[in-house]
Length: 265
Image (cartoon, rainbow, N blue to C red):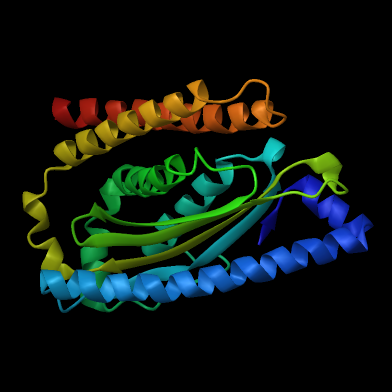
């Protein structure tokens, strides 16, 4: 589990706080384990419905991060997605995940997607952001959870669950809200589902992800407008939602740049 500096330092200095964090972590572990089973059920149903019988696991696992609301950043999400993308194309699997050895046929088809890295990372990022956008109306102390199934590229599908646990105690960290986030993920590749990759229109898929990002921007804009300026956590929530907007705008700029380059070809 990743931890912010404030959480890590406080845990080293305060045994009661460490126990508090350990108890909350145990509860999140229980939720992520349950989510893994639910994702497996979704996977079975998804491929049975499509009648694709060759789906192979590429990388699967979970990642948990613990931070104060004031220190929250999307950088951890971006790093996780980059690590998963790298593992799909042969890099070592990040901690908390497993990447089974790929057969020669599977590896050859996966490599055909090597020029789609921006599309893959943007689609994965939008899948997670789409879930987090549904959390913006949550109360200060709550557990929120949602699932998503996202086709990242032809034949490459991400199954993901995001769990966010917000909690605080007045005697710890000056009543600062603690955010504990769990990401459970499983990626599969089906050659049958991919079909003929040569028929894939990368430009149209990039445009679709650009549109998805713009839709998410409107949701986070609405969340910003709806914040209570008199609330104790206004500044932290404002910073969090603005961080989402900044990341989405940056990805839109990257998508537009690649779309223009591909159109020019």
